[in-house]
Length: 382
Image (cartoon, helix red, strand yellow):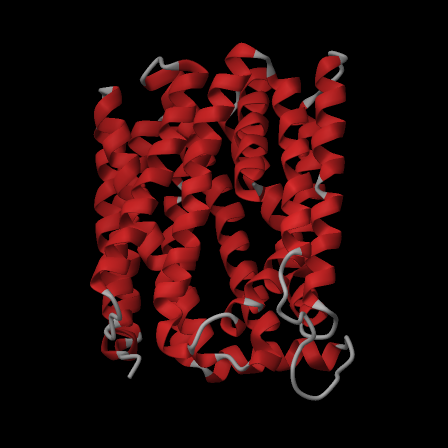
């Protein structure tokens, strides 16, 4: 439910920003502002997740998710909504997710044995992506049929059953090990851990480099509106294609089972992601654009699953929240900056040429990281 609600809100916000402003740069700024709370409070949120009951923290943040959806729905219905309103409540929802993510992710290793972590992570992500597959398509239909305001209201309502789902979890939410306090030293320990675990660090850097110039989500409204002339339903279809591609990627990982050469898999996925970016930039037919976006979702999902599994394997329970929060900081900083960079490139070159250039830059970054950190290619999770 949470994934569907988040996708409804994201699609509605991006659609509304572009509808009000008609600016690709403002679309990019929306992505940057969404990532800002992760950068400012990400490590602090991970420390909180390693200190307090994780189940209670998840439940509290789920309830807070109701506020941005209700506020944007009321402003839109009143005809008073402006771009800065969407920015403001988008940032608020991001602040809520900053504290939700590390606590939720830190519970996963308690539910399955370590030997099944990659399958568990992939299956969990597959279920999440299945919800995301429904969300964007539903958002496009709801916007066309009921309007943006009711899309926000429905989004808020979906967080209620998600909160009851958290209550049903029977696993203890208390962090294991010695009781600790939220402190600057605890946050520094998280950074030191990532620095020592160079495999995790190298995967973070790979994701940062690729998504900095290849964050395609920010310009999908431009492709739907200006390139493919497909409207809100077309935009929802493109986001759905990304989720469907991710489902296929995660399903492929489940069929393959335990893949020990996780570093090589991450690098190969990044190269193929660059190729899919180029294909989307060259596409002039809607069906080809949908295919390219599905491929982007496919290879991105594999990369994310590898990164999450490696964290589960290498981080102890007492450090899990901080390790996950640092991953979120890297990911959201990259997505935010990437949204701004790609938005600026689209404003200067046009969205199609910008993605062709992004594909070439992504490939160059993968080659540089592969040569600079050769242990990533050799990494095996034996």
